[in-house]
Length: 358
Image (cartoon, rainbow, N blue to C red):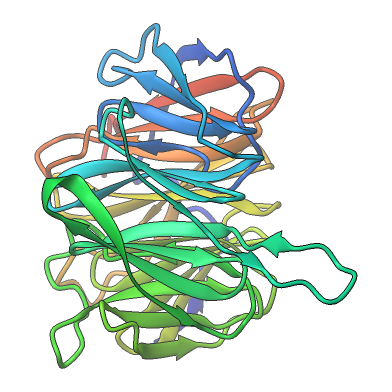
């Protein structure tokens, strides 16, 4: 079967326990999908026109030291993400004017790029496109824009970045960008040996682009205006969180939708992926419906096991906009799950590792 629907949790296979450990924040997170990122030790999120950094939050999860970054010439920050290039983390900030790249601790600005202003019609106002999604692939930083363009920036010696290339996809805004998962042992390559980055368009199709040539390699139909967030998983799987609350699994190799899991009753606001010590991938999703769901994916080499929604946990009063697995930098570590609320409570929540497995 290439496609199946799993709307009902299969209880009893795994239990993540909510830890009554909450860290109060001094800033209110912005309501953006995927509004939580981590380098394995620190966490960051967007709060209007600045970035809030929670330093040394892992592994203690107590009393995070909050600092703030204010990007230059910025009206509004749209996304923050730690990306890994050449085994080094970089903190990338997207805003209404362009992007900034900081070092892995968020203490030094390394690179700034401003998108050019567009020529306006006679009597109109000049306006500027903005970046809408970012990820990394090999030596490149890849950004999608509100004008339907993919931009690539090359990391050179001395942590210096330079604009490499750009291409227009279909002139509609790019909603999200996702590079290969960091622990995918067999990412999908082109015949030329290039890896593939996935982009989701507001008009519907999910497309695959070779890096660095930016040649289109795949186009997978998808309903317009429905993608909320997008991540990659091992085995060249693409996970799409939709505005109607489902998590869609797409195989990039076959360009077919493999599964549709109705995980939430509201738009999916965040997806995150990790690999358990057993080798089985885990996916966590959250939404405005105050639910956190755990989905298991088949281990590498397992062609018989299906993806399954194994746990659905209610978090009353916790409208979540970001999730991140942590403690899973290697397959030897047991993961933990950190969630970010964008409500007035301004909280960071924690779930600990599974305590039982059948």
